[in-house]
Image (cartoon, rainbow, N blue to C red; front, top):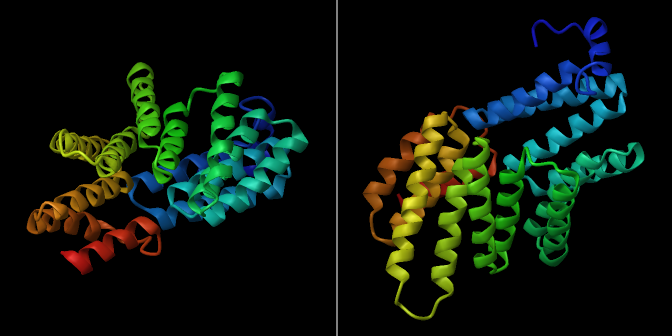
Length: 284
């Protein structure tokens, strides 16, 4: 980013990738900062990318900036912002003929709709978006897309279907080496196993599912730590702590979550950190 000179390098958009390199660098930096545990700095970089893209008014650069901004707000778990920005992205992509960003915007819009209580509409849109990604051959973020859809299924009591998607997502991770969302795939698998366990009336098999869920949370923690992905490490720790609290392991849960939460220096207005704070203050 330090090397980027707008009036010297903007023309590279017409040679490589179809978008402005300065915007692209800021977009990738924003996602990386969120993963590393700096959600406020991530938002600042994303806002810089949007401002630069709007200055150039280059359609495909704008589409990328809106796309990555929507993606970042999803990571920050801000469904209202996701919905609003996804609608801008969808409109621009329709106008300019950008099938990839149109589909990305539609999937994220569906995720936001589901979180805001419009589950039927949201999940239907996510299913259509997955089919559209397959049709255009866009596989680079396939594990991420499957994870979001599986999460939505879990919200409406369709844990078994969600687990199937997560299995496909983890298989894709191991086949392609695209490990960006690997930790979250394991964490969501643990959450859906717990949801499935909660829906079962018989006690047979429940203990095994609890063990499998804990193993998934531990695997999510291990992956996130190996990647130094503090954002995903925090989520995995919260999920594991909740399970341990059910089992009466308060001290073990506190020893896990407290140091991770106190590592953070910013972003305390975000959903993940607020959730961790409530858990620490109320039960640990």
